[in-house]
Length: 108
Length: 115
Image (cartoon, rainbow over all chains, first blue to last red; front, side, top):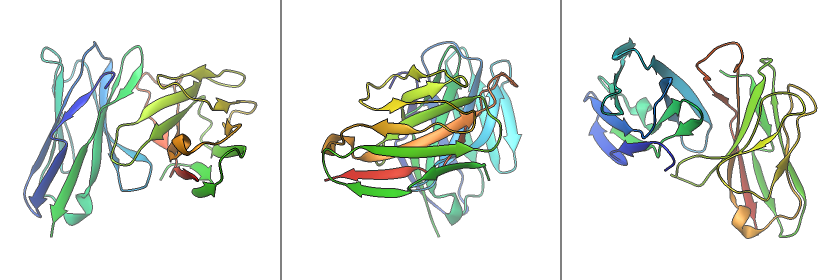
């Protein structure tokens, strides 16, 4: 990938458990965003964290950013079957790059 | 729900045909993008535009072309479709000048199959 690598590539959990996805990037950024993609659809913006922020919350989502390690994590708490989707990180700096994505399956 | 539309949603076409994938947005966004995405794979930027009469090539080499005659419209054309063009094509837009965040809004995609 040009910029972002996500880990794990695929994750399968039971409903009610927490899901954590990680994103690493290579160059300096202005901000980092997380997107969600349901199968066969376009991406939907979930949350943005600026380069001077360390943590951000939105509902059941918690995002952390460590610019010294060039990494971010997305935590989805109390997962639901409807959270089943692919999740992508995207970085904005000189260019806009998407990561490789994590496929999350939440089993009812 | 984003106000960005793509047509057709699905297209099956024979080799050698000329096709145009349509993308329109009603949000007044200046920046628009086309991505190519194979199933379960990452997105690859193939074209983008900063505004009317601006078109730029992305990171992935593509035989397609784009035009931006109107702010709201950013069609992508393949002059001669080949089986290697089979993929999902995603259009997106962002309010690039109005903010520094470049948050993108995506259309539903066009799934293209070239036989």
